[in-house]
Length: 114
Length: 111
Image 1 (cartoon, chains in turn green, red):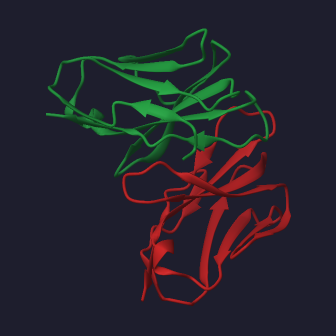
Image 2 (image 1 turned 90 degrees about the horizontal axis):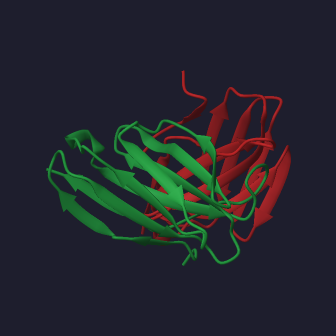
């Protein structure tokens, strides 16, 4: 158990809908990362928050947004869902926001868009 | 061309054999390197962390980094069927914010 908690573990939704994925980082970690893993793209970095502020942005679609709350949990919002958004979404956390720090992953949220 | 290249496999070995995995990369700014193990549809689990060049050993696992060749390796000794998983290399820069992952190598250890 990495200490990173993600909910829900699985969800199925229809195209055009909106979902919210939730992440609680490891105790003491200030940084939260979101990654998307699909069969053909591997693990793709979406976005990072550090202590409530956006720190880095990767290949995140405009239909997706995230935030980190004062208690350091984070939410990833996916809207106007398309079939191609079906993937595993991972949250990860680390203590530091930059540099050589270890990053621990949660178990993921498996999203299926039908 | 991807920043990090990793053979997807599958790599099939008999139980007890040495598993040899590697990644190549193109970004010379990468300074820290990690190996993760991922079981099917589970979260990646951190196995090894190495900063800069050199070797690191932890139990049955040995990680090597050759920055001059932009090449990293992971060796698993005395492999077990429970080592069957996908192994992902990941790397980052000292000033950076994210890890860049290889595509993963699927390993099958047969009893």
